[in-house]
Length: 212
Image (cartoon, rainbow, N blue to C red; front, side, top):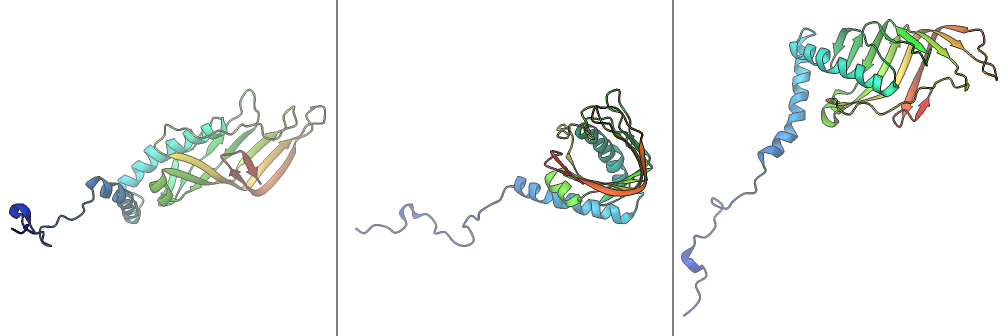
């Protein structure tokens, strides 16, 4: 008696009943969520500045997070002004300042702050890389007793935010700058003033290196 080629009389697999590999719904949700969010942002940006979604994101999420993380990064209080305008890849804040402290006389006041960022990188990596421009700032910098010009210890930005803020470049345009040097023995010298100054600083490795 010969062996049956199909023991148990099971039906032969056919193209119609052969199971196909499946991909979980969660995979597609993770894949498409950033794309969907990007499409929504592009759509609301095209609708106009009065978009409720864009207004909510800028006012309630972006502005407070930028202020908080800049304060954390600089180890100084940063007061960011009200939102004056925004687009898909940038926002303009009103008058802003970094006030002096009892231990650090350096301070800054600026008429406006323009912040540019990459929305695609924000969506996919939750990292907000900032390109900041200070408009007509008044800057006061005093050399400390150790003859250092910048005594701020830069730190990583706050980790409990909805996204990470990573300052990359700070530019200043038409700045009024007052610098106060010290002698070799630490005695303050007469202040020097410079007007209509333009320049920029690049923060490398989280502020470990500053390039002017």
